[in-house]
Amino acid sequence: MNVSKLIQTTLVALMLAAATSLASAQLNSGAQTIALNATLNESLTLSLSANSVTFNLTPGSATNAGSSNITATTSWVLKPTRTAVGIFAYFTAAAAALTDGSGDNIPSSAFTISDNGGTAAGLTNTVVFGGGNAGLQVANVAITGTNRNGSRTDVMAFNINLSGGTLPQLPAGTYSGTLNIQAQATP
Image 1 (spheres, rainbow, N blue to C red):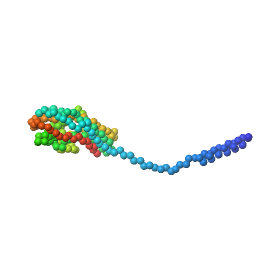
Image 2 (image 1 turned 30 degrees about the horizontal axis):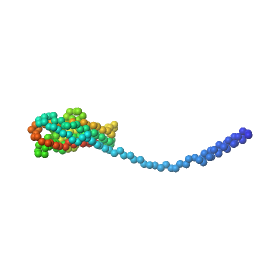
Image 3 (image 1 turned 180 degrees about the vertical axis):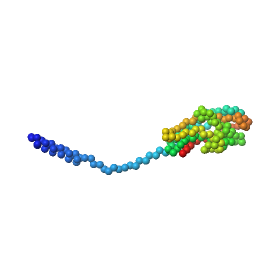
Image 4 (image 1 turned 90 degrees about the vertical axis):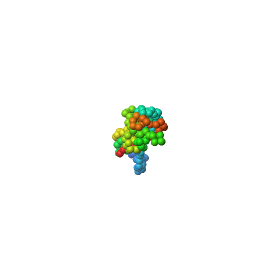
């Protein structure tokens, strides 16, 4: 076989291979699209470790600690427009935070909360919830780009101070009331 015939045969074989290759090339459809939408809802929750505290009161005593501390866990997922999360404790009325139902009352100013071991404070402020002069802002968390999704834990210790005003003369009885704990995210 001469070189020219060998080159011819090789060229014919390559052309047949190329034609076979082109004939079996992939065939593609047009692209179809799927629109994707994902939503992460904004949320703010507050949960308490327990929902009751008892006090054994001593007449005229400034120290009447609650039977247990309560842990409040606040969790949030917030939009970028939110600037703070506040945690509030409040009563519905300053004059009668706890009452015996017969007209004898313990005011909110005599009820104190120590948050996370800090200085105890009375519920004497007007806050976004509850009665006038019957609340306390327990905590305020500034919201930034790094904590839009976050949580906070507050361990609250309670005390009733019976040493001031007419409270040293508080008659024997069972006094009950409702303390509310609530969180708010502000724009």
